[in-house]
Image 1 (cartoon, rainbow, N blue to C red):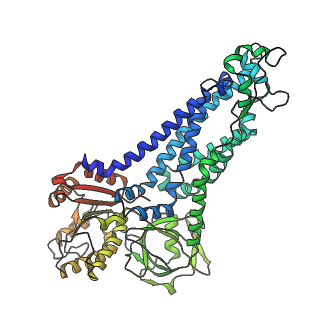
Image 2 (cartoon, helix red, strand yellow; image 1 turned 30 degrees about the vertical axis):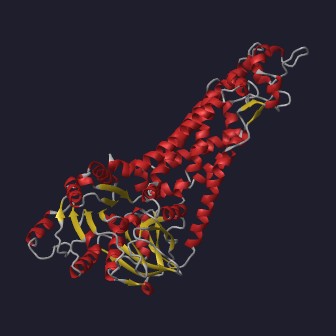
Amino acid sequence: MGNFAANEGLSVFVILVWLGINAYLFVQFYMNFLTERWFYTRVLLGDALSWARAPAACLNFNCMLILLPVCRNLLSFLRGSIQCCSRTAARQLDRNITFHKLVAYMIAFHTAVHIIAHLFNFEWFMGAQLYRNSSSLPFVLSQIGTGDNASYLNPIRTDQTNPTIVMFTTIAGLTGVVITLALILIITSSMEVIRRSYFEVFWYTHHLFIIFFIGLVFHGFGRIVRGQTATSLLENKPSQCKDQFESWGMNGTFCPKPEFAGNPPMTWKWVVGPMILYVCERLVRFYRSQQKVVITKVVMHPSKTLELQMKRKGFSMEVGQYVFMQCPCVSQLEWHPFTLTSAPEEDHFSVHIRIVGDWTQGLYEACGGDKNETQEAWKLPKYVLECRANIFYDPVPLTILRMAIDGPFGTASEDVFGYEVVMLVGAGIGVTPFASVLKSVWYKHIQENQNVFTKKIYFYWLCPETQAFEWFADLLQSLEGQMTEKGMVDFLSYNIYLTRWKETEAAHFRVHHEAENDPITGLKQKTLYGKPNWDNEFTTIGTKHPEKKVGVFLCGPTQLADVLEKQCLSHSEAGVKFIFNKENF
């Protein structure tokens, strides 16, 4: 229970508060439309009125929230501001994308309820016009405003009106169709399978949010749902006049015809603040993207991993942070996130990019990554291969190879030195944030920095192929030598797992298994085969470090995250608490 509270307590509280506000708004606005002002509207529409308006209020609230989790600069500022006060609160900001998705699902749910309720409303509106009986209150209400068209209640003005025409000729109808289509495209293209296989589809359709918000702001300007005005309520009280509707407005009656008006648009008041914040966010991103970036070195590592070392004036980073990169000669619009693999102590910043798609392939070609030797900046090719349907054509002359960088932005790995005991778990290229951490450890011990709070690091790296180890092995060898020289062999425990191998490789491993250094990595610590027994690993670490908080940091697939999070919650040997942190960008 203690581990659950430490890991999930604040997250559960935030979600419950968010759900509570949604529930409150739904009930409050549902009840608001059961008041006397809306009595005549309910005569036409019944309960569908409240069922349309209550989710609209929840939509306003959630549309106010949806942009905030993707304001990266705002989150980095908040993270830095509250980290010194509450590490637990700062960790919640690392779940920004998860919250963004939850808010999106809530928007989709309330949109569906809102649309279904309004479909019923239009049926009731149309039915009131078609049932032409002057002894029917719905028909009499539908005829109000026929002459001056000023204080009408029924937006369908005649029995000849086509509801579909109303949908596409009114502000509310047209904007409703537009924002619904935009929302459908945004959500469907955000599915994991599409986002991973067709990132460009996800990227471009997500920018339909601009159309979504424009339509959302103007949606209420049509005032299509109308209630009795305050002045009219004083003269025509529904409780007294509802049964005298046939004589409304005639001489000798105390009940004049009721007058109706729509509520002023309110959505803009909910979303204008976040929209301004997001515009400022984009302006900051644009400013930073225009700053000159110098590529100082390009290295092509085994397993098609491209390393870029760069410099930018005023660039400052912390361990485990990430940047967004754009290469205009590959794509003018696409930005992709990459974890920084350099340490804050270095005079440059670097990223390692695995070549897995069109964009990374284009960057690989543009940077001369197909060359085997190390490339200095002045040797970089001044061209990029133009990509058409995955076919690379002849080189196109280019005056300069430009790279735009936005960031750095904070991640969970920033907290790594806030724990006395740390577990770092990387899967494949997911080792990149921990390259930055381990490099920083190396520099701190070279500089004999006595302010390092962390006393023990357990490092796990899981890879499916032997070539992937090569680019990182040099760093581990340097760390291994440094720790041995300083008598700190117990500071860093690392376990490298090869999860897949060929028969020919297995024979080679067996022959060289007794060698002093590992045949794959060249390290004294031998490579392990298969996958870790996480239950044993957590039990062992928990037993060795009683009453400690152990920071567990992962950069890897969701399946591994689920396994590690479950282990963190289930292990509490000798009072130890495992605090789970996952890279999430």
